[in-house]
Image 1 (cartoon, rainbow, N blue to C red):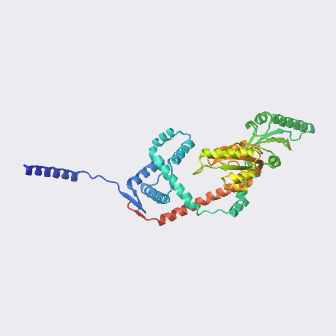
Image 2 (tube, rainbow, N blue to C red):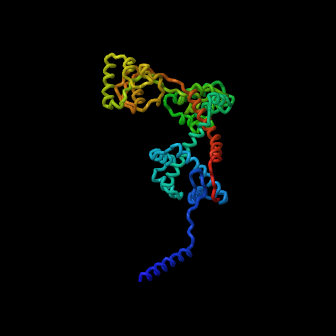
Image 3 (cartoon, rainbow, N blue to C red):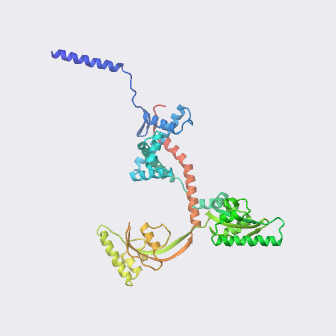
Length: 426
C-alpha cells in the first residue's frame, strides 16, 4: 500500500513537470545596463520610453534611436543619483510637498487638479512625486558640482557692463503715455497760443486728478490717442530726442510740462519704469541686546533677564555698556550692540517688524525672535541708492547662469566617461 502511494505521487509530479515543460515561456525582467554599483532594468527602460511616447506623440525618432537616447538619459541619471547618495544629499518630505504645490500653482491648479492632469497623461501621482524627487536630487548634485567650476570675477562684471550688450541690458525702460495738442502746419501766432493754452489746461487737469487716458482720448491728436496715449515700453536710447530730457527728470506718475515741436504741444507721463541703475531703499541704523536660552537658561529665564536689562535702560542705563555686559550676540556685543546700517529683509521677520515699527531714538520693549529675546533701538534712517550694487548682483547671477549652462554638458560628459557602464542590450 505504501509503495502504491509513492508511485501515485511520482506520477503526479511527472504529470505536472511535463505540463510545465510544455507551457509557453514567460519572459522575466532583464538587466538593460550596469552602471557602477547599480543596474537599469528593462522594465524601467520600457516605462520611460512609454512615458516619452505619451508626452511627445507624433514627434519621435525611430524606435531604435529613441531607445538608445532614453537609455543614455537613464545612465546619466543613475550616475548622478549614486553621487547624491554617496554625498548624503536628501530631499525632505516637506521640501518635496512644497515643490509639488509650487508646480501646481504655476499651472493654476490645486493638488487634486494636478493629480487628475497627471492621470490623463498616463502618470500616477506617486510616479510623478518620485520623478520630481529624482529631478530635485539631480539638480542639487549639478549645482554643487558644476558651480565649483564656475568662477565670475568682479572684472567679468565690469567687462559686461562696459560692453554694448551690458549697456543695453542696464538701461532703464519707460512706459510712456502721450498727448499731442496739434497745430496746423503753418499756424498763426494766435493758433499757437491757443494750442499752448489748451495744453496747459490739460496738464493742470491731470495734475488735479483727471485720468490721463481719458484726457488723451478726448484731446490728443496723436496716433495712440484711442489707446489712452499709451506708447508702450521704450528703452532710454529709444526715446524720441524731443522727450528724452523730460523723461529722465520725471518720476513714475508725474506729468511733464507741454513740450513744443513743429507738430504741436506734447504732454508725456511716465506710467511705469523698470531697470536702470536707480534702486532706492530705506536703511536703518540699529543696535540691540540679545539674551538667548541655552543649556542652563530656560526661555522663561531669558525673558526675565531681558526684562531686567530693559528696566535698567529705562532708568538711564547706558545701552553700550549694558550690551557689552549682557548681550549674547558675539558679532555686536563688543561694539555696544551696534549692527550698523541694515537693509530691509536682512533680519529675521520678528526683528525686521519691530525695527520698522520703531521711530529713531525709540527703545523697543522686549520681544522674541527665533534666536531669543531682544531689545533694539533705532538710531537713524536714510534713503540709499543701491542701484549699482543691485545691477552688479543681477549681472553676476546672469553670467553665473550662462557659464553654468556652458559647463554642465562638459561635466556630464566627464562623469559619463569615468563611470563603469556595461550595456547588456539595446
